[in-house]
Image 1 (tube, rainbow, N blue to C red):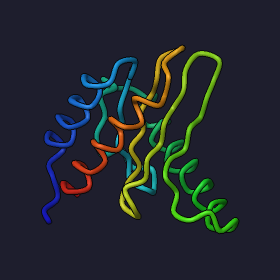
Image 2: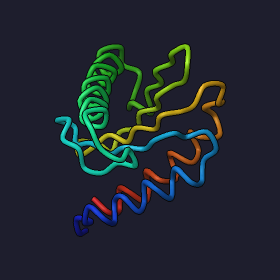
Image 3: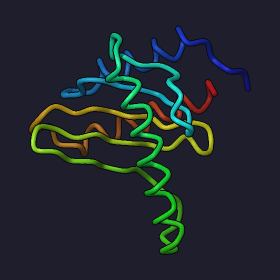
Length: 123
């Protein structure tokens, strides 16, 4: 299993964003919060999302383990103007999808899981 280049990761994230209606941004970060790839053009927003995603996934994973709920499947963070879906790539990374206001997460979850399998083979 080889590690993909940043360009290959960005291509996969861009394809995911294009395939799922209502996804405003897609980001891949290490479990330590280091940015690995993003469809967010630039700026502090993607650095912040990397850190938030890693932290939220770590906290949720601990809660799931402590409550004996099995493996963490995903984390959904909902706000008044949209949502963030987080998916774990094991101990390696976290995939974050930023959803527009009013978008149902269910169809996006399936697209995210499909992309997750692709990304796992790249890591």
